[in-house]
Amino acid sequence: MKLIIIGAPGSGKGKLSQFLASTCAVPHISSGDIFRKSMELKTPAGLEVAKYINAGKLVPNELTTMTVLYRLEHKDCEKGFVLDGFPRTVAQAERFEEFSDIDYVVHLVTEDDTIIRRLAGRRMCRACGGNYNLLWGAFEKCECGGELYGREDDREETVAARLKIFHELFTPVLNFYKARGTKILTVKSDIKESAEDINNKFMRQFGELFK
Image (tube, rainbow, N blue to C red; front, side):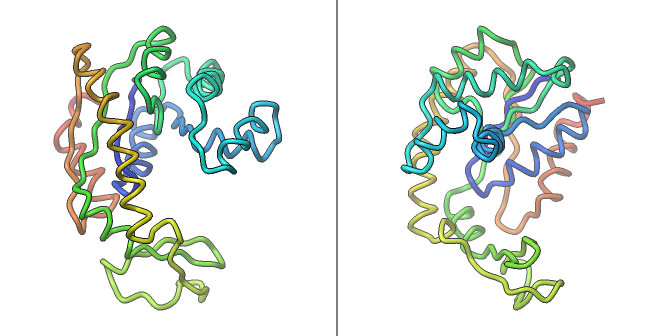
């Protein structure tokens, strides 16, 4: 199974991607994870990527595509993959189309107001990295006793700016695949739905395709 997952920050896209990768027994390929790993290892590509990320800029299309396609050439991707965060531009989609076909685009739809409220309530543990959300309870400390904090990039104005960029980038990508007749599997995410709720909803709608 070859899948592309499209969803805004805070929509549950990462968790759904991991769930589908596990369900299909294929790798979960996140462009963000690849970038972070290459930067950590200080590979030539990683050093180049770092120049853009550290400057708060988008990694150029060609560098992004080259980095992801290199990962997809690994043996564990022979039976398929779940792409999370790629392609994020039409240019990347066109280049990827030359490399491989896909079975489905999974489109996780979440209202912007929902995402802003969801991320504004997110808290992380300084000690163990655990995740909580004030939408599901009045959490004061982590189960491990660690202090909970809100991330800077979860502030309302920051999230709104990230969503604007998301829509500008991914709406053309989604239209690109629609124009090519690619099957789009759309699932809607509501305000208090957990990642598990979203995964279960997806399987109720489209589970037959993954048996």
